[in-house]
Amino acid sequence: MTKKNLLIFLIGLMVVSIIIGIIFFLSLSHDEELLTQKQITSYFNNELLEHSVLLNLKKSLSNNIFLVILIWTLGISVIGIVFILFLFFMQYFTLGFTLSSIFLKFKLKGLLATIFYLIPHKLSSLFLVLYISYHAICFSYNLLLFLFWDREINMHIIIRKYLKNLVIGLIMAIIISIMEVFITPFVLKTFTNLIK
Image (cartoon, rainbow, N blue to C red; front, side):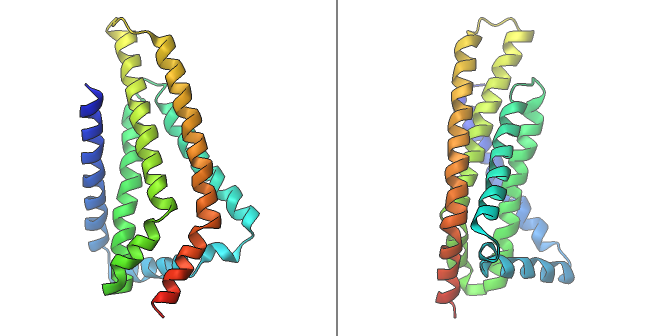
């Protein structure tokens, strides 16, 4: 498995996950659709502004850092690849589901709503999942080759690189949390003002 093939596979899984998320949304009952629209409305009405900045930042940091550490830790296990792929799938499945909800809620303005939803922190968050998942799978695969196929792999170098990936992932998680708390509420407020 080459790194290029893995990246192509993950991008393909990303697309499939989004499509499945959209299909799942289309299969919801009317009551479930109404509930989803209510949640979308709450999100776009700047729900983040209803709580203290410190509380929002703490919650966002906890979620993002936990996800990075979880995926990174799973990469240390030779069976972690399955769980990493599941988490990866769920992140993009949720994206497809949410985008469908936004389009249903805002109709023709759904494209504009999607742009405001994705920028800036959501796109960054999805890239973070791709980044940390890619490196976690690479490490797990190398570990598998080293332990069970006796491949001559310099694990010391690979471990150092993997630790750097964790540090980069954590820095990205912190930046994304800051964007989510300090920038996203105003981006969403701008959208709600535009559609009034």
